[in-house]
Length: 334
Image (cartoon, helix red, strand yellow):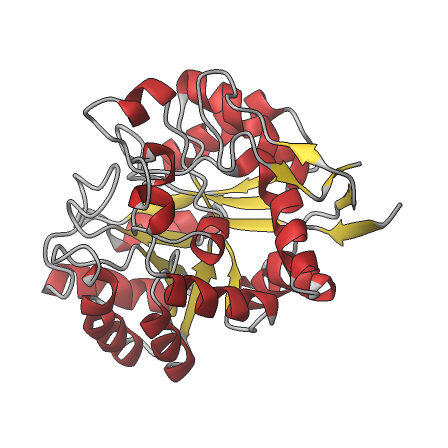
């Protein structure tokens, strides 16, 4: 039976939530990945170093896996100052996450005017300290054009801060590939859902709230272009799942919470996808090698073994509906 072993997979964009949901979902990432970049948009958000370290402790206490390290990030607001950023660096927190206000789940405390003097001052300090800026790159315009409308902001920041590594998070539009390739300090993450699904999977038949996310799934053309980038293990793109769990009741209610829960099936699903396109040899580079080079991360040593054996995705996991619920994958964990 065919098997593969992945060395130190990394998930560079992850939502673990907190409280009871954290207890449910954290183990799936801990068993599959050596490191994961955890997003700070909790309620209340992670605004300072002390709250980030306390959150990291809660994650480690729940997942109980010593071969997994959650990488913490700070929610970027105008209240950040040099002292807090210096403290972050000293404590090993190297990521700032910028949310445009109102753009996605937990962005109520985000930035209204990204190019204002205070934000630019913070980013100048971040560049000086060697921190990394991750951005949810969407405007508040028409939903299918929000990512492209944000290109001017990416271009301005990349040119203004040429020594600052900037991450175009969960890139979803094929028109965004070119801008990532244009600027040497601009990189991107790709999700499983954006390289394997399109808007048809949300509204093509009966409305499926469990594939509703932000940035929204785009056209088949966009999906296919992003898939080719992933399959080729393009050196400027790394894997970031944007696994974002919501209870089934909140996905199916009038709230219509945005977010796709993919953590339990990420590696088997990616192996299935890469194998289907005869590019399985590039999977490890996409989920491990690229991130280590881009972010300068020394990943925890961890081997994850997969076998070419069918895996049926559960319909529900403790009140949360996972991506591909009820479907069969060609690969599974050993």
